[in-house]
Image: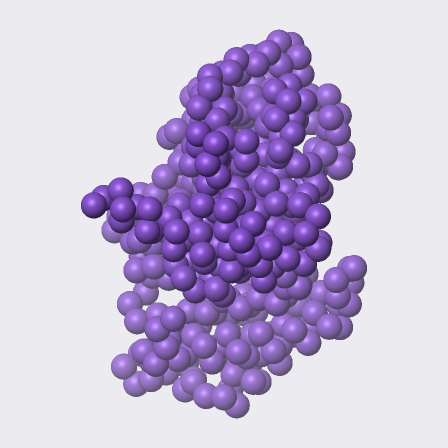
Length: 165
Length: 294
């Protein structure tokens, strides 16, 4: 059985031949495209380490077959910085110590970008924590992560205001 | 790759999907959001020889409100409902329950039909359709269209009335009665995890303040979400009050058949069911009386 999927990955069109339909989006990113920033944690949708954006929405790439994603726009941690400048969420994670070992961080950051795009959480730390509940950090950097997301929301709002002016 | 080998096909139309199901029946599994089936495949608890991926069948997704209530396509993602600003007025209980369903990344893929067809007794959708008296529409080549009441749809743990060649296509939810007050309460170790136990309530009253058609559903407390009919009978026609609610909750806790697992003993689940039922009744009453707007 041979399948082929056409994806936009971080803005670049990629056609990938699949020799097996069992390949998940996570496996495709890591093993076929060499994009190892997205992590494999639990492989059952409980930890959030594999979070990426597909068509602008955060998903667990471990629970999504690559074959189901034909034609999709995928954004991973590798595609977040623009022209060498870190994304405001990345900057805020560094500024607020939003990680320790760093394994969950790509998933945390992609999930945070998705959360901010959804626009439900606002500046309420409780809603941010609830909105990030699908991403586990075993180092326990949750306080820094929440602070980073609050700060990143402010930075993004300022940037949007500056661009509008 | 962890799953056992399977073939994969992605029909573009409902008709094609039904043909494929008719041809493979027992050997096939439907793949929608994959948020439950994915882990089952990875753990080899499910080993279908073919996956029928329905994600490309657009007609199976979407919300259609009309005078008969709300029709929800089986392929509708949980987050589509969560983000719909009209849902809270149309079906307050569904709007209240959705944020309890797993986490946002899961809700972005997971579907209404997938949750119902999987029939986990601790999941929100089986409890929702049971309380709301929804009908589930299934299609197949052999039987055509079939409407199944929520009470008949769930047989037991992970088992539904769907035949192997049937595809769950939509859910029909009757309109919310005017003035109804609702509540959803769950106890889970982490927000978004499956409930150790949960309760959902709908209360309405007549002009004299007597409760009419009260509904109380307990979930995570047995082999399927259960309407506590004896408790409901105690509430029907009575005037709401704390003593009545406590007595009804105690009765409800005797109607369930809870189980032991890693998270909780059956005894603890029974205790939780009573506490949650009582609190959910109080919350629903406060909302019915307009004293609570969250």
